[in-house]
Image 1 (cartoon, helix red, strand yellow):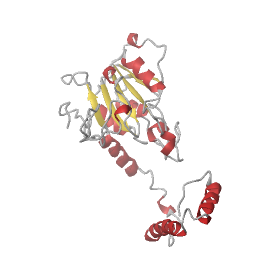
Image 2: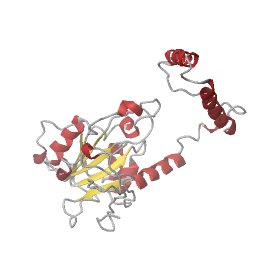
Image 3: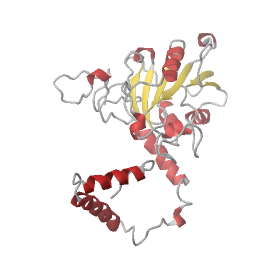
Image 4: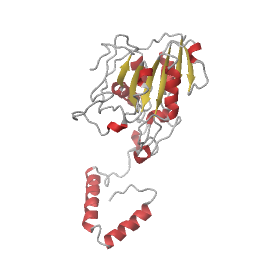
Length: 293
């Protein structure tokens, strides 16, 4: 029987023993759980080959792996908004801009890009592994003559006086897994909301949202010139710049409905009352026209 209780295994075993002795949990129920776990292990050959083949360690994270990961990022991005008017698309961004702003808590942080279950159960912020942050990818993509100003947050700065041609705001959730990510309001952390408000009120902006799920955006969407749901792109930030600068078009579509408010939840495609912010299967194209696919 597999029980994921790493911090309370002893109390779990003690309580389960009491429940079995009292007849509240049958031995047959435990045997059923054990039988299913062992069956999977036998089919997987775990008992014949209990240890990983270490000869493949030098292949993990190889160039071909990272190239495939970059492609996966590129193909999973969902373009949710492109221009405040459909007749005036904001993307693709100009690689030859003279001066741009990159802002936000997730622009230069591999741990935030990767999310939970990265090296540890909950993951962690910071450059915890090998990869390319979104900021680094932007630096590799734009013209060498482009001046890039990076600020995690911009409070107190007079952005409208700085001559930025556009801004890329990258914000979202911080790493978590399972119940540690419970959020009754499904909101972006306050730091990210403040950055969106400050930047997008002063400079034309693309917002890149890093999250494992839809989040509440309704009040802030009008400020944005463009919005991309990048989910958890992992280590390959260049998959994002491949797309936002126009080398590839967007291909992603929403795999679930994006709500306007948590008060609407649960909400699914086909419900009698269906008024989402973005419907199920929604996704814009950039190069072939800014319309739902």
